[in-house]
Image (cartoon, rainbow, N blue to C red; front, side, top):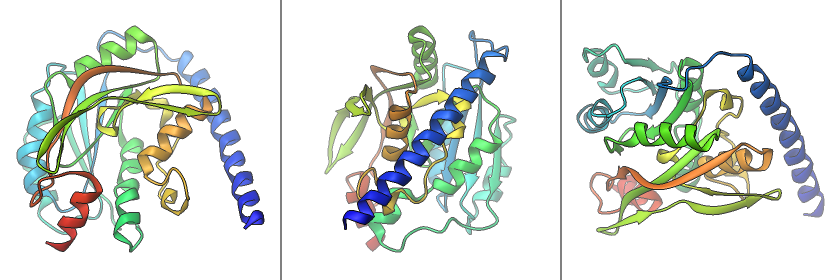
Length: 268
C-alpha cells in the first residue's frame, strides 16, 4: 500500500513537471504569434455518440444563436453508429466541421467509471482539428445561452487570463438551480472554477490532454475535474465570473442531470 502510494506520487510529479514545461513553451510560442484580441476565433468542440436528434435540434441551434459571431463548431463522433454523420453533413453551415472516429474510445465497463471519462477521445481529437484561439467544450445535449461566447471572450480579455469559467443553470431532481464557480486549491494555487461547459481557455493549452485514465485514480476521477486541477497546479492563469452562460437540461427520460441521470438512462 505504501509502495503503491509512493509510485503514484512519483508518477504524479513526473506529469506535473512535464506539463509545467509544456505550458512554459506554449506561452513562449504564443507570445511570438500575432493574435487579434478584438474578435478572436473560438472553437466549440463537441464530443458526440448516437444522439443525433438532440444534437441537431437543440445543441447546434443554441450555438448558431450566439451574439458573438466569430466561431467554428468542431463535432467529433465517438464512432457513431446512428444517423449522426448523415444529418450533420446535411446542415448548410460552413462553420460546422464533423469528424467521426474510426474506432470508439476504450472506456471502463463500470457505468460510474465510464461516466467519469466518456467523450475523452473525441475531445482530444477535437483539439487537434480546431483552428481557434480559444476553446470551448460542451456536451451534445447542452444549451448555450445567447451571451455565452460574447460574455466569456470579453471577460477573459479584460481579466487577462488563460482560462475563464462562469455559472450555469441545471436541474436536479426536477428543481432548477444555479451552480456558481467553486473555490479549488492545488499546489498553493487558488481559483474559483465553474462547470466544464462554462470553460473557455487558450488553444495553446491543448498541450494538456483530457486523461482517459483519470477514472483509475482515487482522486480527481472525473476527467474534467482532473484537467482543471492539472491547470491549477501548473499555474495556468485562471479567472471566473458569476454570469450564467449555459443551461444544463435534464437527461432525456429523467428529471435530473449528472451521474444520477446516467444511472437512470442506462436502465432505460
